[in-house]
Length: 235
Image 1: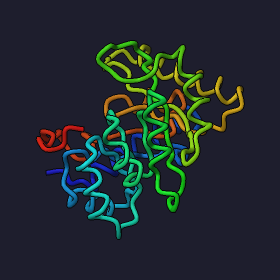
Image 2: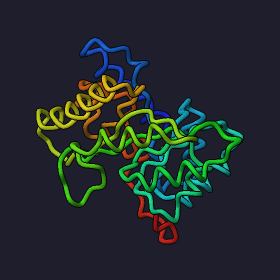
Image 3: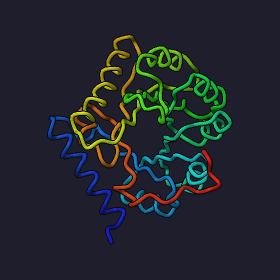
């Protein structure tokens, strides 16, 4: 059976190869290991193999892992949809939030972030493929939301995130990722200090990196087939 350290090594090799193929430094791309539904022991094993950043979709599960593994000095990213009644836990248990698509959520995170903690790094989620089943602000509305979020205290707007529709068409995937890159460039031109494009998962790392991804979110290729989500963690 392939181990977590071996899978991590393989994913890192994919990232490095994809970056070098277009003349990018592999160090420009951060690997976010998506550990949702996997126990703290699996995260600890990945951390022992040098993995630092982990992504979680379920608030309670992620907060419990962060507390259990606090001594490991890991960085925790919340990457799932976020309900208003869960913002306080996320604001104080996580270092990043990737999926902001409403100003109300950002305002609550800003108000509830402990003043003794560093500012919460956040990304605006953009629905680049227009799927009604997915969260994310429409591309046409992203700039207004980004400027509003950037003005909030206790938050630091870092960039944009997207989850395009699954596709075997590499040209289509690259077009979706390029749309997010152009939007980030537009916002930078408008004066926002953005440095992050969170895009690309296990099946489309190469297309995302080719279009400028700085964070790729990989779960299955590291931990294996996804387990069923815990029933007691609805968000």
